[in-house]
Length: 152
Image 1 (cartoon, rainbow, N blue to C red):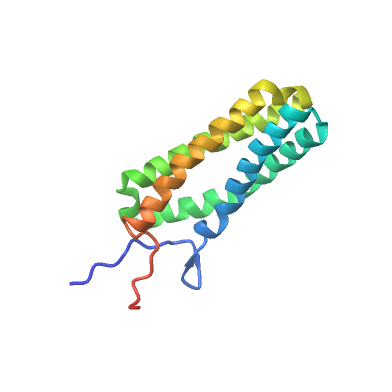
Image 2 (cartoon, one colour):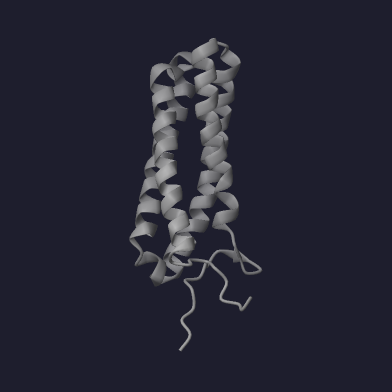
């Protein structure tokens, strides 16, 4: 009896959508931290503005990635049975909520909202992403979530 791998429900032509989308919010959130660090060192308001835009872009792309991820999560019970899937999802929810708070504080408060709390929130979000990324890749490499069953 051949056991198939857990399937990605959100896919295009057999290619899972979630892994195609997640690099964008991750890159934007890491870039937010980098811009915050540069703003801290230089005081140049252009870096604070860049981080606000990066946070906004990260939130939009995270929403798209979350939709695809939730479709996968609820589409195959074997995915929901993995503790790594729960950690990945819940950790990313926390990261997005913190990023949303960070974005709103900057939007409402301007450049002064970056230091120290905006920078600290950016750092916490990136640390959470390191953990949730590790758990996401664990699902792929250890549990073969969304890995093709086709013979090589």
